[in-house]
Length: 415
Ligand code: IFM
Image (cartoon, rainbow, N blue to C red; front, side, top):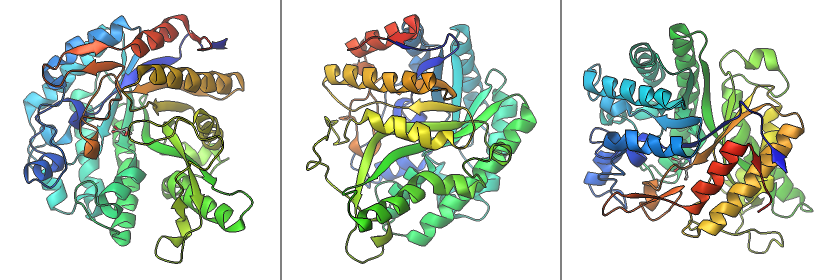
């Protein structure tokens, strides 16, 4: 039987644009209204108004932490103009969690940007890091009293890929390699500056950023070319951003300067084969996986279930010598039995890692309930609770009960 310590954090995550609804001042909304995105977020899950009942659900399931993000475009709808009612809203949201004995883990930027910020160049603008840090400092000072666990930015490497390489998210750029590098560098700087601002406001706070970790493997380990491209891809996807923060595996003292813990969002693996010569030759091509004998079940958006990869990324990121938090992990599926299996297998990997001496603070499942899955719209169902998008009614899935049992009993049985 796999065990978890009494102070281990167990909870679920959401993000503002995916659940709040009616986020009219951000880049996504602008692009959605202009017909440039495949789906519209609309009313979302109306979490902006229903947060109290949603937190009742989390409390009833025994969650002791909850990860959510604040919507910068509500708080600063025009450059330099602050909306008091939005600030007070988030103060109430954090208080509502505290009243339920749920520790808030708050992300300051989860992909969406105020429309004005994107118009002036988004993350590629020279002064973007300073502007974000100004927002972070002011928000934490004015609304952050009941929060002591912050994540500055969600998945910077995913953001730059989707926004500047794949043309999937605003500003819909294709293969703009230079802009992508500029944005990534500015995101790293934004993290460092806002980390300092948060610490100035609350020296006891713990501050990280959420990293999208992927287990990168060579498609054919016997082929030198596959091994080389997979090493390069692993560096680009898993280590480059940490390097931009000045972090090196194995150097705890210098690593602690701008990061208090490593937050890992883990979903799947990627097998890489060397491709034909071209701009992306160095990072190779992700193979389709079907020809791998050990290929696992797929989510409704095609991601392979691969719990062993979580063990590998926990090992890889433990080398930074900081505590780790699994800040997202979940599966898009309508088959809740598969979700139960996914949960059980990933939780067992975490408890094995704990038994092996790894310093893991907690596990946060993505997501509390079904929500707006970006360019996949509302069809990708990640929730512990199902949402009926006609009535907005939430219905707990069996996986919510299974996870609840783990949260309460602090162990996971074989499923
Ligand atoms: O829904 C997203 C989330 O916004 C960031 N991490 C991955 C999730 C599933 O795709």
